[in-house]
Figure (spheres, rainbow, N blue to C red):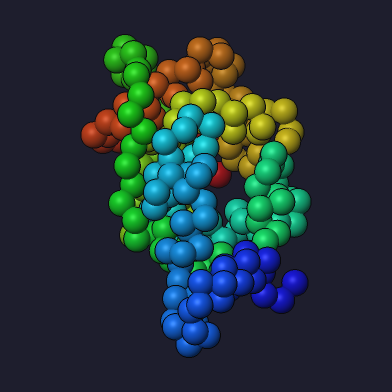
Length: 214
């Protein structure tokens, strides 16, 4: 759509304050400025303070851009993100992604049951660790990582509901792992995983894995 609506709005605001075009151009397309517009839901520098919104700090840049384009094009279910994403260009997504990638991730401060954390650690190691390495923590030196550890538990539950109710595409490998875990351990296994991610523990994989090599 050419220049984004957000960019135009910011530029108009700058002109109304008497900023020169040159001075505005120096700051217009910074990743920080664009990310600051997300703070109401995702917190300062992408660290969420509300249980329904994920933290987006330290995200993998490719994952961020792909996710935003999916929202923009309606390929991923959302409540408001689809409308918000249409206000940005892909170049702006890339600027935001680079900025967020360099922000320190701050795990949400929330309560958890230690016994469930211990059980969740075993479940993560068996069913999740091959894709969500290091216990689901941010791994900025890797590629294509998704952050689970330290996210708000309600957000994780909402996201899982979206996957299970076909509102978001459930990858085949994740579907097989999920089905296997639920068959073996029941619905309460999900609560144990949520507790494990809430605890943001110093996790070391025991290499248990499962029989699914794909």
